[in-house]
Each structure stands twice: as structure tokens, then as C-alpha cells.
Amino acid sequence: MTLLGLESFIWGLRSGIKIPNLGRCLLSVGVQSLPIVSFTALFTGMVLVVQVGNQFMNLGAENIIGGVVGLSLTREMSPLIVAFVLSARIGSSMAAEIGTMKVTEQIDAMQILGANPVRELVLPRILACMIFTPLLVIYSNAVGIFGGYIVAVYQIGVNPELFFQSLTQMVAPHDFWSGLIKSSGFGFLVAIIGCHKGLQTQGGAKGVGTATTESVVLMITSILVSNYFFSLAFFAWMKWNGYF
Amino acid sequence: MSILSMTNICKSFGDKVILSNLSLSVNEGETFVILGPSGCGKSVTLRILTGLMQADSGTLSIDGKNMAELSKSQKSVVFRSMGMLFQNAALFDSMSVYENVAYGLRQIGTFKENEIRDTVLKNLSMVGLTSIENLMPSELSGGMKKRVGLARAIATRPRFIFYDEPTTGLDPIRATEIDLLIRKLQNELGATAIVITHDLKSALHVADRVGLHYGGQIQTVANTNDFFKSSDPAIRQFLDGNPIGPITA
Image (cartoon, rainbow over all chains, first blue to last red; front, side, top):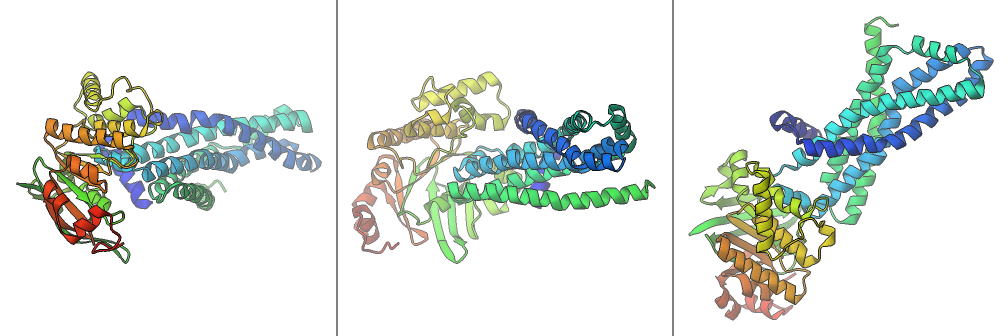
């Protein structure tokens, strides 16, 4: 998998990317993921306030609900939601599509016709995921905060001004950026694992099924593990810069 | 004159030996058919010839050049002079017929779009297909897929054309049509061709020379007429479909 990532990087530097291939991948990763990201982000923001809202109101901590929602979403929830959605929707489809191409000799045909499968198939998918995951996270942040706001204000009775005040006071730019940076890393993991598993597929339909399942399991595991290390790095950076 | 040769090629998968000191020599412009029982390693031989697989040992020479001594870019130039018809055509199922046939031309990168269009339509016409360029592979019959695969394989005018079981899965009429097409293209293009098959009728139709592949090697090579009249026990066993003889599973 490391070699595949390296080869993609080298192809990217050497001969650039084919724009039509990248365009197709961007459409698939980005635009077509918007509905499911909207849905999951909205309800995540809403349930977050359901969980913490009443407790905070009882403790008299109404004034930090917006901030808690904002911090949770920007630092952790949105990057993870988007990464999981992409794993299920895009990563699995990459493994299945490339796996099917492998077992039906389409990858071999590509090579015989003078094309490099890494340049044609892997590189555009990696770039599309790395570009669009942070954009989807920005969108997910906005939708999630909106969902939290609706529940906080109209269901729990939090003052709208207090919600936004705590949101803007507690969520710093570095919280926002940390989520975006790690989401780009998650996007890379989704694409490289999906493509790698696809290219390693052997056998017929069963092999494709196995590759797809294994890819999703590996994506989710590696996202969770890497999230821990991303967070460690982020807090080390905050400490280094004197934020606490 | 030999333009393509394999010398003492060995290939194993784990403990299973597939090719054991296989040697083969193909002359320029001829159609060489490799016959052999299923699972004897014909496709592995073809994959090594086309650079899709590396041999464990042995020498592959194409056009007088030892492939092991060439740089990666030199190898890719040699492999670009090859076209291949895959067993199930291996058409890109997300692309139209037009895009499939145009694919190799686009990889070369020097053709203008109108040149690509002319070449695609001309090649489709050569394999007897017209007005199907906008169809998707899923809309084609098995025989049509093979023809499109063939049009794609010859679009870049390769010097070597490889056919992997070109008639497998086709009815006898379509199979004969493909055989005649292979022969016709051979006459028109003059490329060197290697055909992998276990279809005797097909071999008889297209071959200049035939080799019998079993036991990890190409054991017997003869002109087509001599091959089919041969009294060699292995050839007779294969031609007669006799389960008892030198060729074992």
C-alpha cells in the first residue's frame, strides 16, 4: 500500500493528472456525497445537543452549548462522519470497481494499451478524496451546527445569541483547521485502501466481495487509529504554541 | 527470421511449477498457434510474452532485444508495439465502444480528435462492425465484444498481436467468423501473431505453425498440415481427445 501511494505520488509529479479522470472522481466523491453527508451531519448535530443540552441547562451552563457543539463537530465529529460516509460510499465502490476491472482483465487490457493503472485509476481517486474530504467537512460543520442550533433554540430553549456567542468564542481557527487537515489524511486513507484492495483482488465475484468488505473494515479501523494520532499531534502542537 | 523468442523460461506459483524451461521461437509475420490442454500454462506464457507477468528465470527476446537488459522506458516502447485480444474481450465496461477502441490511440497522445475518430470507425469497419460506436459493451453480444476487442487491439497497428482463446464461448459460426477475421487482419496488417487456444478447428483455420504446450513446455512445433497429420503420440492424444497418453492432467 505504501508503494502504491509512492507510485501515485511519483506519477503525480512526473506527468500530472488527467483532468477528465479527476473530474469524474471529484463528481463521485464530492457532489454525489452531499445528500448523505447532509443527512448524517444534521442529525449528528441535533443528537449532540439532545445529549448535552438538558444536562448543561440543569448545570446552568447554557452559555457553552454552542461552543461544545462547534468544538465537537469541527475537531472530531465532522471529520469522522465524512470519513465513514466516504468509506462506505466511495471506498467500497473503489474496491469493487477496480476489483471487477482486475478480475475481468480490464486492468491488463489497460496496461497492454500503454496506460498505467496507477495513473489512470489510483491517482485521480486519491486526489479527489484528499481535495473533497475537507470541503465536505466544512459543509458538514455548517450543517451539523445548524442542526444543533435548531434543537438548542427551538427544543431546549437556549438563547440564540448565547449559542452563537459561545460558538465564536470557543471555536478557534486552529480547531477548524485541525479537522480539515486530518480529514484530508482520512481521504487519502480511504482512496489508497480502496484502490489497493481493488488491485489485489483475485478470483471472481467472491474475490470482489471479499476485497470490498476487507477494504471497508480496514478503512474504518485505520481512520480510528490515525484519528488518535492526529489528535495527539494536534494537542502537542497546541501545547507547543502555548494554547494551554 | 525469429522476431520473438523465449528461452528456458520458468514460472512457478508457490510449489506449483507452471512453466519449466519453456522455449519458443516465432518468425516475423507468421501466425503461431499454441495448442494445449486447459490449465497447462498457455495463458501464463502469453502473460509473460506481453509483460503482464515476470518469469522466474529464462530469457525473453523481442525483435532481437533481450527484455531483461532494457530499461523500463525501453521495455514500455516494446510492449507498446503489442496488441491483445483477451479471452472475454476485456472491454472497459464504463466506456462506449468508441472510447474503447480510441483508448490506445489516446495513450499515444499524438493523434487529433478527428484522426482518432477516423481510425476508430475504420477499425470497427475492418472487423465488420458499423454504427455501433455509441453502444456500451453491455449492449453487445459475445461475438461483437470479441470484434470490438479486436478492433481495439489493432487500432494502434501493433507489430505483434496476441489472441487469448479468441473463439472460446462462441457458437461455431461466430467462431469461424473470428478465425477468418484473424486471417484477414493477418494478411492486411502483416503483424506477427500468437494465438492461444484449445480449439482445433480454429488452429487449423489461422495457424502457419502450431506448438503443443504441455508439461510446462512447448514440446512439439510443426507446420499446420504436418501437425494435424502427425503421428507423435502427444499430438495424436490431443487431436483425438484421448484421456490416456503422454499428456496428463
